[in-house]
Image 1 (cartoon, rainbow, N blue to C red):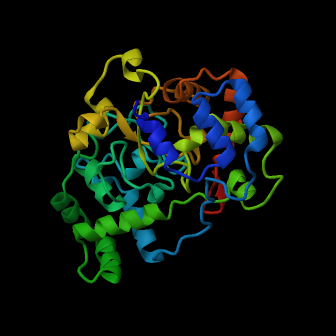
Image 2: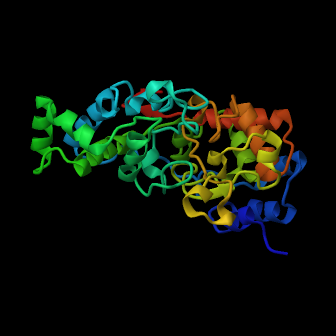
Image 3: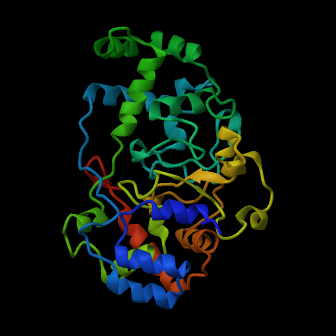
Length: 340
């Protein structure tokens, strides 16, 4: 019998505590009792499958400043009503708090807006991974008729009529205001949107009192249940695709299937990619409700319970859910030196 896709991808990670992970594989779906028993063999901060965020990233400050202005500029949209920041508000965890975002003309887009914070660490962009880089990603909302509804010739024309933009681009880019330079500036700013120094990062760096006993129990459950199989690395996700509904038919149960629910299939047209999505990073996840590509989970508790059911095939007791949520709340970091 072939191994399920989720198990193959999980085994390939190789970064999880050997004893605990092997027990979890052998049992496939741990009971709450097994989860608690595994806590005793999960290793401490040394060799963890999650890496702390870097405290700073060397970037051209001029490009960051120009990209920040562009990111907040509504003139990039056709009717001057929507900016990148409209759906990715920096004072709201890099999202807009809506189930689905609103574009020009009050049109509703197809999916929930993922956070822009730490997006530079994702291996691809968008839920379906159709953009290889942050630069490529910019084409999507700018040209989409329901989002910004604009075009590069229109945007370039507007910017060239602004003397401050003309001067700023000329000081950084020898060829001035060009599509590639606009993309480069915005993407550079987005790469600067890193949120280090979460309490969990401080714990990983050796601060043993950065987390409470319950938060540490939640982290151990997060690993022993198998959440860590997809949510690991520096962004605690964002580095692989996975099917939504590995251990149950999420979409049949939810109903009203739409094109966006096909996920990666919309890009590859490969049947195996139906309902495959980029695994979201979990940093600052306590700030980014609602959850999933469809925004169907209003709270972290709901999201964890749903993931337990459809990805792990287990009904987590509410006590374990609460502990995992307590851990997830330690993932909130700082932006520009201030707590989020």
